[in-house]
Image (cartoon, rainbow, N blue to C red; front, side, top):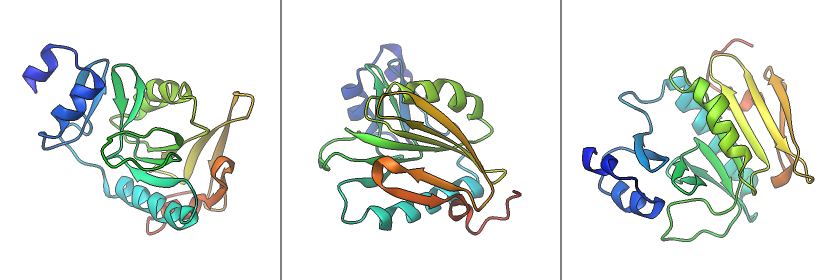
Length: 190
């Protein structure tokens, strides 16, 4: 890692370097940064991620878009790649690539160590992505999410979703999810 961080990496160099690493990294302004420094995700975080993938997968089956995990990177600038918790990618799969080419939905489950960064820096990076139409930031501590949606004209709107009965309308991919389904098997306050 020390050698890799001495000179700024290109995204292409980063992907090759990443193949020999035991953990996942993001590339931030040319510098590899561990995705989950030292600790893994909490059980709540992981359960919500699995529920997101489990809810999206059958709804997208047979459609041109597909759900992908944090193993798929998202290039947000010339020297920065992120690994959103869950994405919906709408470009045909390419076997030898490591990044999404046409992401339409990004989902992040907030965690104490990255909450502030996700709400400020990553959100702005995501909003600059031309293909993105939906960004969902999920709070694992309470049944709540912030849904950002881009209109056809390019303007972003924001909607706070609260409670298990709230619906998430991903109109760009023709999917509607109950927020409560993402908290299945969790005893989280409303």
